[in-house]
Length: 172
Length: 101
Image (cartoon, rainbow over all chains, first blue to last red):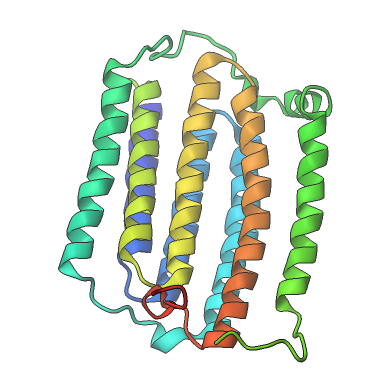
């Protein structure tokens, strides 16, 4: 059952990811990204990280893709159509992406590996909500604080970036 | 067929490669940005899979931080793209060649 679901989600996710890259319309690309993220959330649910699956849909699909769509519609770039790819670009892109996949697959084939199969009856540590809170407020307390500060700085940065400055010399 | 760690890693690798391909071949800054997000998500798949198969929490917690940083990154990056568009009226990387020569 889990194998069927994995295949389903994996094929769905990869197809939607390809849709992001090869779609002609920017908005369609953003919607493909949304579907791909939902597929990844499904994969997370299969890995019994339910909280992360929910967060994935909430944060990525809810906030990030909505922001992308908002910006795409705000800018409305050149009718949304993409130019045809250059042959050399596609060739080199496929070669490099293929090399990346081959490298990673050979790593999983020949690299040192301890846990290729799930031990029977192993408890999923990621499925317990309490474990996240415990970790976040004990072991990872400092990173949580730093990330909070990072969010604050990002907010200030966005405000500064989108402010109009008078009398600034145009670097065009 | 049993789904082991390897299958999840393959999926993660393929997703990452697709994102990488997109960054290389697309000319629209927004699409490049979406592909960057795709690469981040691919890495989170690998982290969660490792975490599940090793019975630890660390990978899952790390995905938390990746999510947060990705949200902040998207906000700043899109603000930069909007500022760029206001100044140059284009977001095609082929036309953004102010640093050329």
